[in-house]
Image: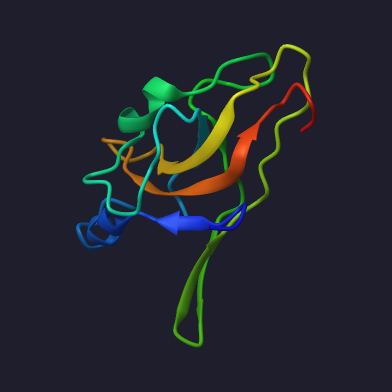
Length: 130
């Protein structure tokens, strides 16, 4: 898997059908976790609570992650796309130094169901750069 690849949780397709998500009006966030947990597409009923125990911490990172702004939901040539603003965290000498995965989840949903995850390609440090 290449760095930055997004992997959709298989369960999230069922969540769409159940009406769990109201995109693009829901608040979608990305939270950063350590390598203590390795997400897979086949994770059963993925929710933020399944991953938040391994969430990173440090100056410049807010618990629960950052909201992805300006969501758009579109379809072209049979391909559905959910897009939004890029999320960045600033470099900080006291920032987390152990970021490994980005979990994308619906903060508006009652159970904070997750859509999928982003592979950061290895451990990333916000001490070294944004």
